[in-house]
Image 1 (cartoon, rainbow, N blue to C red):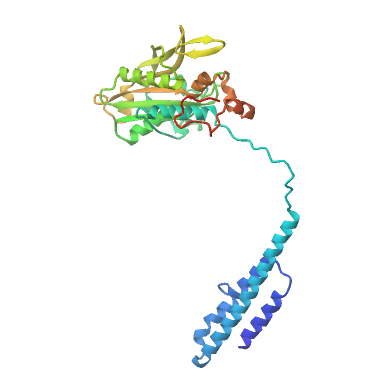
Image 2 (tube, helix red, strand yellow):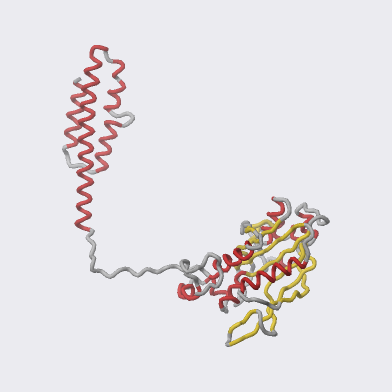
Length: 355
């Protein structure tokens, strides 16, 4: 009992001093922690003679309750004192004018990606994603790009190692390769995302955005491709009809390949899509090359398909009257405030948008 009395007197004396919260918690740990004095006394109960055990346990519980109550009271006093001090020092002047609230805007590129995804989802396409850092096989070799192709040169592509095995993807077509290697046909996907090429001027940037489309199934032909693109262009530019032509071209990963032009005219300094006798190149496309299908272990005699690639930034420039690609990436709030979209005003179907 003498030990319990000493512990009680010693810590009651300590708790009468002016202490801060850290010191109180230290005392609490000294008493009730894993190796605390009170905790140790409880562990000794089993070794005490049975005749004395009941009285010892009763006295120990009384001392524990008294010390715990003192500690809690002390903590409460400190917390109340802190609150009162803050109330005195941190008074709010309700006569001050309210702070200006600046609501953010959705970037035109983000808005355009959402619009594109929404339109293609209506005709059964799903969205696929892949990494920005790619390997040479997925970015070039699997896509039937020959070793001597200029796109593989250092001045066109950002390589991340001397062996040219790792690079920043130059298009989102590697997502198509990853999708086909991972799954079995049929496929019907779009792959929007960032791409990188060593180029910079009014209409080119080192980083830009593309969306690739891929549809692989049995008996797919150029008619399906034309119908898909015709639907997309009319929906995106919100016109009832368009003039569209396929102009023969060449891409390593498609055969035959084509550039797609759409008709337009200039009226009051603005581009009017769907009317006029002028032609505007808008995207590249074609039937997936048999070699690409072979590279992803798909039999080209059983499955065919089409692919297309669209510059997202270019579409945004055309639709929203933006004449300099570099402005997309300059982080000028004034520009974003003008061309951006209010997130609370954007309808869920992304149709008929206005700034």
